[in-house]
Each structure stands twice: as structure tokens, then as C-alpha cells.
Length: 294
Image (cartoon, rainbow, N blue to C red; front, side, top):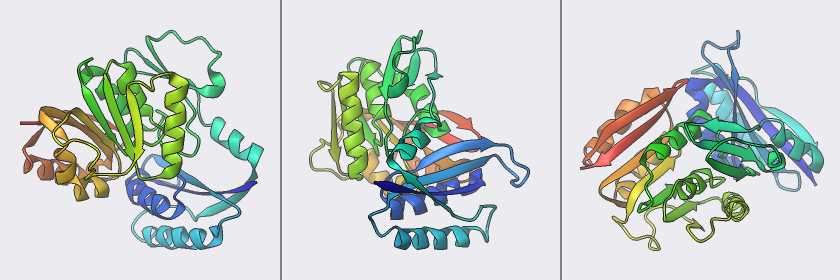
């Protein structure tokens, strides 16, 4: 089977809407790659990529994404949408070359499945095959969420991971000691990848992955000590009330996936829902917030 890689390079301030455009039309997950300083861009440049199977109507998807990219080009710096055809082997290698062993915080290491034979001197090791799902630990939002989880998770905690992607945050929560973790995502590919990663890491007894979003009749409200949502600002704002309803009193909400230009709006929305900011991390215009239910 052949695959079609679609990609653009843009200023960091446009990444949030680009991810929404790619995710809306491709349905196969989105990969973000920091390409650093670039003379063509006023801020740190990021490459946004997705992959389409060649046996689908990829030309229709290409045109839909291209329209969105062209519109964004009027308000910021973004390259033209590029297309590259890959065979199955090239597709696998394209994923692999962007990922390496990553140490995060004081105790955590993310090890791609194809590098599992390498020795890692960390207390918590997560073996990961991201496949077509978002979440490798390399993107700032994922990394900041992991750093926050490291300081919060206790053995008695129940954790809900909204938009679990590859399952990385769910797996980390379980390996940090959480006795019950639920991950949900509305992307079938992400569900498949997350379940496989949970199996690889041998934590099936404490982590469950299912298709869905919130509200969710299969998850008890007010039952989670920690809710983590590394998703777009639009989804966070649209579902702010529903997200909050799954937190216990005094529970923690970890949110990321948005840029600093939407931070104030997000803080104001959750303040009205009786959640106050406890801590904050920032990396290259990306923000992660830890809020607590009062």
C-alpha cells in the first residue's frame, strides 16, 4: 500500500488552527515537528504532517486542507501544502526517523519500540510506537503534561485522559502509580494504537481505552482525581463545562495543546467553573496549565 504525506511549515502561532484543519479532514492523526529558527519565519517554525492512504479519496482531502492553509496564509507565515507519495516501508521509516529516546522530568523516559534494546537509566520507562496517533513526548505540549503528571499522580488516584492519542499520558499515569486510568479518543486509529501500546507496556489491568468524548455515559461524573486533556483550544473551550464535571472536588485538571494567545480566555472560562490555576509551564509559545477544582 502507498501513503500520501501532506505537510506544511508555519510559525508557531498558526499551529493550533493548522492542527484543527489537518485533524478535521485527514482523520489519521497529526505529527508536529519543531524545525527551530528559520529565516523565513518570525517565530520558531513547526512542521505539521499527516498521512493518507492512497486508496482513499486523498485528492478531496488535499483540496480541503489546502483551502484552509491558503486562508491562514493571509494572517500568518505558512508554506504551501506539499504532497509526497510513500510506499509502506518509506512510511514506517518516515515515522521512525523523527523519534529517539527522550528523557522527561526526573524519572521518565520514552523509548520508541524499535529502540527498546538500548539501555535507559530511568525509573519509569514507556515503550511507545506512535503509529498514526498523536503523542510521542517530543512535542512541547505532551512533554509539559508528562512533567505535570510526574508531580501529581499518586497510587490512589483515578485519571481520565481526554483525547488520549497514542496513549502516552494514560500509560505514564499508570506507571507513575495510578490504580485506575481511562483514556478516550474519537479517532479509531488512535484507539487501536493506544491499546497496542498499553499491551506492550503490560499495564492492561489498570488502563482502559475506549472510543468517545465527553459527556460520556460510561464514565462516572465527579470520579477522577486528575483529568488531563492535551487537545486544541477550541475543543477545550467548547467542552469546558463537560470536562469539569468529571473531576472530583479538589481534583486537578491538566490542559495543554494551545498557544499563549488563548491562555487568558481559557483561564477565564475555567475560573467561572470554579477552577483556579495552580501552576503553569510554557515552551516555545505553547502553554500547559494545572488547575484545581475548588
